[in-house]
Length: 206
Length: 242
Image (cartoon, rainbow over the protein chains, first blue to last red):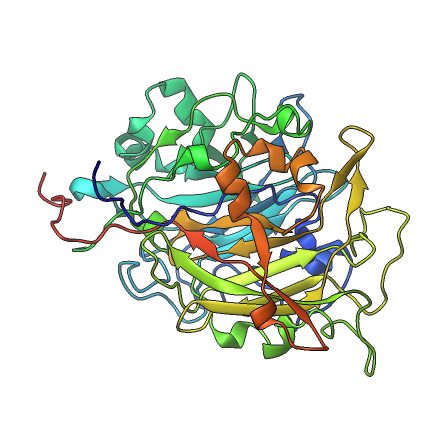
């Protein structure tokens, strides 16, 4: 026998369910209650860097879009700083780098506007390629899923990114890389997230 | 960057697995490949910071925060309160806690909920607050009703309140549900049955707390929340020098 360790146990996760919007985006549920809902403006008006749009679908194992999903985005600014005391440096006034994204209930399409993040420090003096951290919850998802979106036009830094290189299967790394197109002069990145199937998105235990 | 101590590895045995066929919706929505395990880096140990300017002080009072003047929500008046702690038993101060729930009849105010029970015109069903310096939070609300849902045709959700909690780092992000002590539907619920560990189910069950009740007014339940703990930087693991 030995002394017992007195750590507490983490509270278990439960699914966010189909009505997550009531709590986290009540306007989408169909009513107006708060003075302001959180997470609609990711970058704010003063953020430096390229303004971009990100769009996609979350697709289930049958190939159908998931229409009741909520995503959260957490990202650095163009200088590679997160808006947090340990985030690496200053950020612009109004830049929070965090957002909530919900799908259209009819189509499952989601999208948001932000600025493209800069590279950030990795462990052991590595450089992480620009990326968005994403967290996905929905009915039927028991524990929120963590993934990352990288940018196809950053091929050189993507090739040395320490996290992409941890993924043993090179063909699966592509599931994290969003393609870039231009729409009315604005860069649009397309990022479909596949929960199952041949092209299942890589999810992380962080 | 000199301090970059990780959060403790998440004990996945404490959580439901992704694939839980008794909860049918999980079958097509559960990844089949293993999660790729990462050591934390800056985007994991940091997370959004909220302030009191982001919310109103009355956002934590669901009995009144959607009621017309002079009105209040219908149902059993309850206080839901507790502390947000980490696995080191340290309080997590100034963190955002958001909740949502059905009304006393088991009906959600949501355009996709079509259950026959009526909407309460004076109940929205959501609230939010920040923990204080000791990690303490509280809400006033009505006890939600049980309701049926389409899994098997005779499945009923026990009374529950959904909670969303942030902590200080994105790796701590958590959504869960709080149940109420003594509810006979708890052991029968396919969503609760996704959790393999009965001790973990008990951790999701709020305790009746008569000490915190307001006599002749409101009954109380206590629900403490534990987020992942973070390693102390006793010895650096040579993040920059390996």
